[in-house]
Image (tube, rainbow, N blue to C red; front, side, top):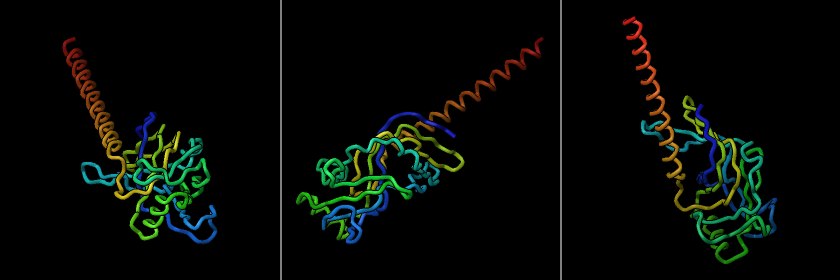
Length: 203
């Protein structure tokens, strides 16, 4: 299992699970939505060069010490803020299922328009942006596992669902580099073994 300790910002999109709710609301507003930005179940992250599904799993414990002090709710991870935890219009918390999100999208006219788009089914995906400090890769299972998240920056409704291709390409390159080094080491061992055999034959 390849383990990587580093810090880099990731973005992940999943099928939208945030919907308008009328009962048992966590925030008192008629523009209330709730759902999950991510879950703790494995999902397909991308396909490798051979066409095989590569999975990702967010461990529940990876969020234990994550900084969630001021998370914002955006659209397409850009510019305008529609809700945020620091003013009480956004709730983001970890439960047994995943990263729960509840938002009041009634504080501004722009937020109300986003609520209408969600209610009409025009916005159907959700994404979250976070800092990964530790992750690992299991070659047999073809699965990346996020083991430590240091900070969550935002949750976002997105128009075009796409995982962070830059980070995926970086991961693929990392694995390719690892394979290259492994093969080079194998060749070195083979050359050394051959030299030892020649030396023994001469002696």
